[in-house]
Length: 436
Image (tube, one colour):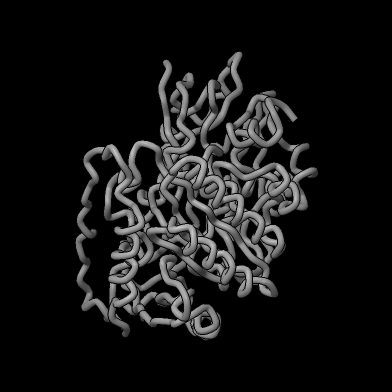
């Protein structure tokens, strides 16, 4: 069967690939005369989940729960289970994901392969810090149970390993206890980046979750203004014991002929968002952690050419001047991001060889794909990031240069020894050719 599958950014445009649905975790990797790649739920933004002209294995068919100890919070599930499906099971029983990205519609295997991070990295680290074990299947028929103590080198290679070390069949994670689904949140404005760093330092000390929105259209004295959101799980009594319905799902029904994100809509949205009220409020975990999940197919608003997400991390010592330069160049270009997310990473070292999180500050920005001028802006931003000693996030990337990748991931050469010969992604092919 041949199918055209897209990444979430819808750029680059995918070409048809042979697809096979995985359904049995006991089965070996399928034999194929084409390079293989596991495709989870397609929520990676660039081309790490694509296999241009190759053979995609649809991982969502591995969607069974294997074991859940509601006393200890240890969960084992197949790699194709969505985080949303895990939450539906565990939250009513007093547990939550230890780390969660900004969407709950990613697979468990994808969370491992990209070593995802969340609003609590300063306390909990990345997803890999809470993985107890997983099984890895290779094309030679071997099966390895990998953990920090068993096959630790394969564990390190597979965390953040972009799905290239083998097929992850199941994952076991340690959950965290909660009293209920409520978050006690607080929203505070900051006038510039200096105020962001001051507020974020205090918030990280006092709260489990911290994230900020930055106005990319602002210039002059307003450059770097934004809103800091912090929060903690609240006691069950805070919600009077009521279990709310999940917030309703709106859907973008079709792809418009042109991007709805332009200079005028960006400026209007950012000006309106910047005036959101400050203060403390009680909210359900869904809108707090997953605001964009409330809009089905929101990626369609960028039109048929899709969009690029640019996410970088900057070391603590260069973060403020580098962010100032990044925002100034974006504002000057007139290609500001619809939703720019800014947060600090903690000092806890990542366990994966190619894991993105590291001490510093990370910013994620979405840009409608407008051809050469968008790619030229990305190259300008690369210059700033490289000069600052930063790195780009492969899970969000669609056009990173080989030089940027090589310079930012010190363990890349060691990682190459663990790449499965039958596996290849469009990202890896773009970096190194068909085989390494």
